[in-house]
Length: 180
Image (cartoon, rainbow, N blue to C red; front, side, top):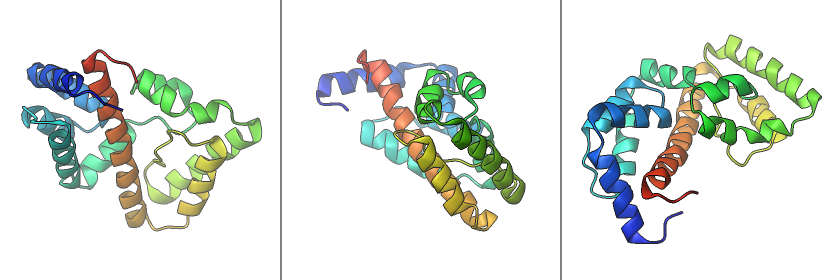
């Protein structure tokens, strides 16, 4: 986290000073939805970290099903490390590192679970993977697969918001010159 205020201010100044295109790209890496990224970019300048997070929550809450599904599609499936590197770059690969320690049985069960979930819901399984083991992510998938697609759209959107928050913190850290 952030302790010192000058670093936080430096990060905010840096984000506020980005061109609209640069900012939209940076916010898209936090949440892969064009409307979210563009609205965040045009909502600058942010007064503070709290202001940025509150605007982020508000924009995400105003996104409808098409935008939510667009953000889901930007995510690699849990366990698909090649795809993880492609979108969120080092962030996504790192977030899913719990899958790297998965046994082959767990990895196979996750691949099958992803497939079953996607067939039932019509969109991919989204979970905030940070700090979770492969077994935990599989357990969460099993507990959620019984839900209806509407409930899961809400669950997935809430998980996406957690991911967005983590990535906004990483964005701030990168712009403060500190590393998390």
